[in-house]
Amino acid sequence: MVADIDAFDSILCCIVFILSYILQNGDDSVDKKLENETMAAFVQTLLQQIQQRFQTMSDSIIKKIDERGCRIDELEQAINDLKAEMDADKPPSLSVPSLPKDDSNSPKEP
Image 1 (cartoon, rainbow, N blue to C red):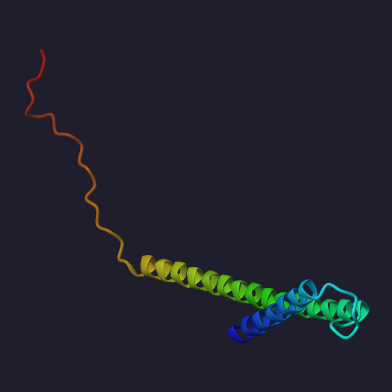
Image 2: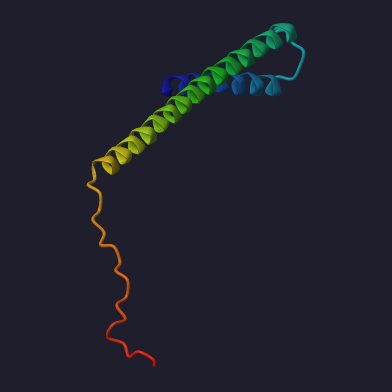
């Protein structure tokens, strides 16, 4: 991915150089600049390359995000399975049933 970013930076530098060259040499002399059609075709090709690189990087990033999302889902499922397994392995808790309150010691009403 770093190589893609470096290539993208070099393409942008070329575009900036070309545009600055055009601005500095604004006269119509054929000797000082490329013909307009040739320049337009060159810039168009560079822009297409930039778009292709962006699309490639975008697809790569989205693919990695999707892979991470699937992995997170798998981990969540594994955790839930472990929780269920741990709950199944626990012995049933021995709870003492509550006894009815013994009222034999309380004074009886006549």
